[in-house]
Length: 95
Image (tube, rainbow, N blue to C red; front, side):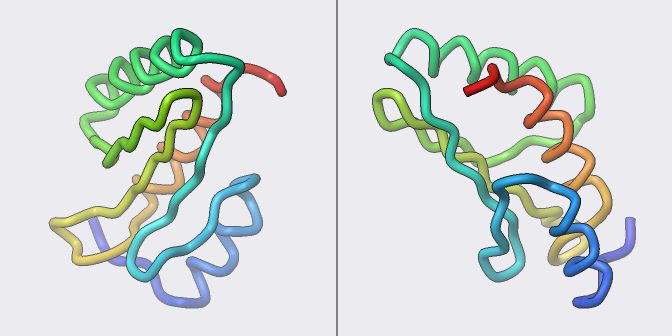
């Protein structure tokens, strides 16, 4: 998979709500009412990662879950990262 250009990344960033670019990665923090809800979300993300064969970095802080996506093989952001971001947003409960 090919690394996206800066222009392509800018266009794709407009399509993924609440995600931000952090160097060669995109990142979003989800907040939940409690730890159990956060862990339930992490399980959904783990299932999604296995299904898509694309695995994010996951940071858990009590009721906050931060996902960081990049495609290491491509050396930066690819369509796979943005597809995963879309799917993660769909997996998150409505706030």
